[in-house]
Length: 305
Image 1: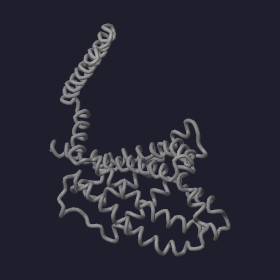
Image 2: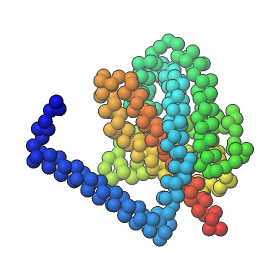
Image 3: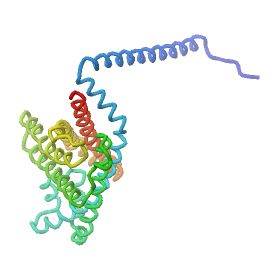
Image 4: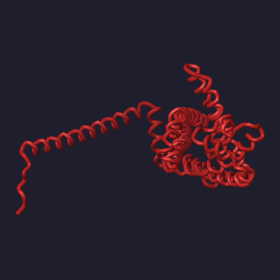
């Protein structure tokens, strides 16, 4: 014999009412979404800026910008390993030559807080010359891997021919490595300047510090596939990249890095690696977004001609 349903009529009515309210809420949300979509399409036909945003979203989805950014973030994470090895050895040698602590040497060059403690503890090893000998060739090799991903990503975004894409030669690898190291110098300069400025002056200095990032990425973009577009056509992406990198830098320097170091005892190395990978993904998203912005604006100008 099946047990009798002991649900009180009032409780059953209340359950049905909750289900009905949830359905009505879902219907209202769907209707608002349709209205927003219709309005956005109307605005797209009237405003070129809205149409540009839609084309950027379409292009980013077409080339799978998120997947490309993930692949690039992984390559950059791998690149940081030999870079840290070389940096640890180099700072240890420089600290020994100057008679100062490795931790102070790391702070002087503006290394991020997430890795400065590792530099301070590891640079005391007596085998740092061997680390340099091993680390530099490996660093060049993984830089080649980063360059290949950058070339492939920009070729897809710009819809450039595979045969027209530049090849990762030793010269191009060395140039990219130099520009990436220059990016770290810009990071250090931004940290050093930020420590001595505050308030309105600090905001102005932060905006000014986007210029080095802009210039560096403009130089990188000029050496990547862009279908013969002039350097001026690459400036909007460089500007967006500079603003985005400085924003990421401010957030990581004052919020993410202190919190991650404070929680290192709780989450350990895995937590730090997760934070670093997340930051590299956002950094890679800026790279892909800059290429999408440049390609979209260039194609729109080509259609007008």
